[in-house]
Figure 1 (spheres, rainbow, N blue to C red):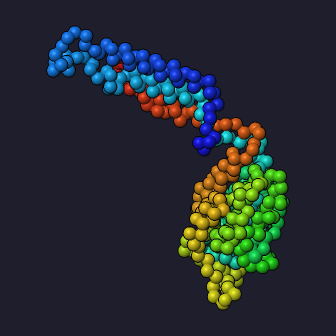
Figure 2 (tube, rainbow, N blue to C red; figure 1 turned 30 degrees about the vertical axis):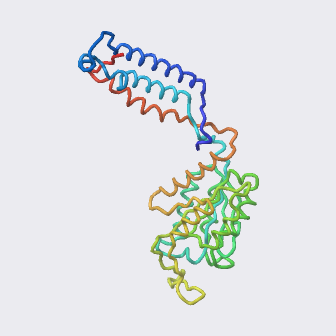
Figure 3 (cartoon, rainbow, N blue to C red; figure 1 turned 120 degrees about the horizontal axis):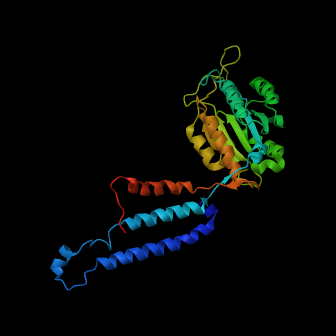
Length: 328
């Protein structure tokens, strides 16, 4: 952020030295007036000197100078981030990669993790009206379900048809999504976002995904993790538990440390499932932040000068109080 800091209207900064010079002149005048010119005994000087704190104490001119400095900086328009243009935001694609594994049948999130994932994806699509959205399904392997489309109605039936039973092999190979997403985004990869909707990442997949990060044209990575810390029981459509190859029930608990590792090693913005729409709003902020980092030729710098207006108003408020006067 610091390296991007600059001013939209830098000519206003020319007023800063003028304000400082005026402040120094007034303070110097007050200091001179406070001096006692007649010969007075040193031990009587403090008692006979009026306004003896003019040289070192705070005076009204100090507040005025600070007020003018803050106002000048605000007028100069400090900025460090861009606001993407509406047209650019609508063209930025989103690739949603849904994990369709047996663990997504778990019922710790009702009715199941996969069902809740569908609901959240539909909410996100509704909030991105007119934007391009693609769909990938993955388990032991990854497959393109729908290329980027602006028609949300086309995506809904494909999303509803996702089921672990139709996947060629079981597993949770999130890394297999990466080449498909990059190829699908093509030249738009730098302004796109790849969103994983799953119940977490294992250590091996985190390492494989990390090999892609930092490469030119990489999309931003985000994850909506549809799981509770306690986990649940993965159930088949007939109500019987899903059994692992070892013969026991599938462990659907999540290791929070793996989510932290995924965030630190792969730059994935991890968002946990919420009962309200806080998770959807968080995902939208991730997508928008990627747009600000992308090279949008129509993006406008956001004027942050208003941050300096609030302290300036607090300094000015006492002078509007009845009975208060300002002495120069």
